Amino acid sequence: MKLRQLSDHVFYLEDQPNIGIVREGGSVILIDTGAGSGTAARILKILDREGLYPLAVLNTHSHADHCGGNRFIRERTGALVYAPRTEASIIQSPYLEPFYLFSGAHPIEELQADMAEASEVDYVIADDEISLTVDSLPLNIVRLPGHSPNQIGIEVDGILFSADAIFSPELLDYYRIPFHADMARQKETLRRLARAPYPVYVPAHSPPGRDLAAAARANLDVIEGVEQFLLKTLLRRKTTEEIMKELCLQYRIQINRVHNSYLMYTVTHAFLGSLKEQGAIEVEVKDNLPCWGKTTLPGDRR
Image 1 (tube, helix red, strand yellow):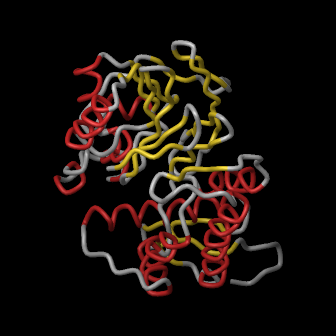
Image 2 (spheres, rainbow, N blue to C red; image 1 turned 60 degrees about the horizontal axis):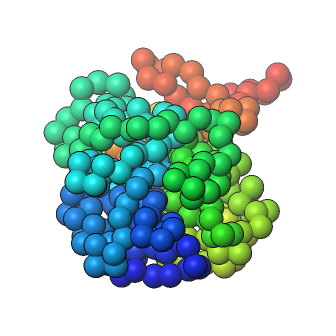
């Protein structure tokens, strides 16, 4: 974990994910806290070495690798935790994440294993807030929903901490189909980022970049490519499981963990939900199972 400087006031700790730091004198605001107490302890050790003290934590979203260190840092420093609506609920009750991954039933052990420790949220960022001032430090809120329901980014000095809205070409190649919970909102986010003026952006899982428009378009291309494949394969109605299997075959995805299988199942539903929202496909029950297919127009024959 290395401390990198981006401007007079903006730094980041190079890690998985990157941890944003906004500095004013000896005080800092952290943007996310990493996957757990081990990461949080390393963050505090580096800050102490630099003579810095955390006043607050701003969580971009509620996934465990972004808020898992909250509790440790909050208990040891008294730093206040800020998070957007919806994301705050999951940060405070991490059980909700495996609960929704398991279709609203009590989640199996394999899904609970990766939960973050519960953390109190001291300030819930409202949907209409576009900026925050924390102990005289001004921060701009950038709405980035899609990867998670109400993800945000933080902009300071023209530098955007873009959370998981953008994946690098290397990660796009590695994951094939990145995780997003709401594909329609993710596409809207990427289209906005493709027009955004930020000269530097810091994605959560890659080094900082300067061509945000190109990165956004590359991510959008992957999503639209999957959508086109689904429209071709859904000329015949299929179950979600059949569709997920075809996606894995087409994109050479090999799943070896139960947890990852449920993530892929969620991604599959995100694509299907988005295409249905666009009116491109429809769902009906056949043999007691929901089946998806291209929308039937008047006069079409199935």
